[in-house]
Image (cartoon, rainbow, N blue to C red):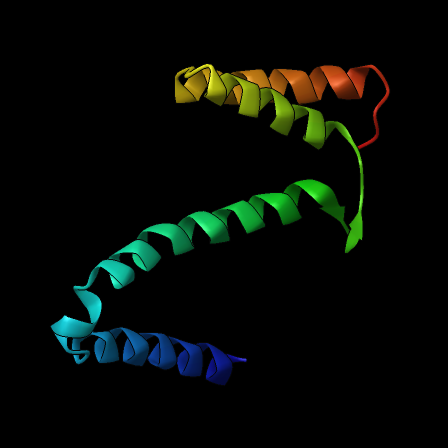
Length: 102
């Protein structure tokens, strides 16, 4: 197991080091800037979708979806981030209290 941890750590460090060797003309263009801006958003959206919509590898409809919907509405209304979290948690808790599973 420790061999895997060390190998992964070395691979991560090597990947970061190799990033410094990429010529600046390849990463300074508008397309690279756009990709650097949009890729993290897409990855975060995918992570949220998987975390919200699945349980044990299967799709599940439960209180988390209600919490996510409430958080989305709060964000659209430009609520402060802390309020968004409170609204999402309260909505999920209320949904569970009313009988939605999980």
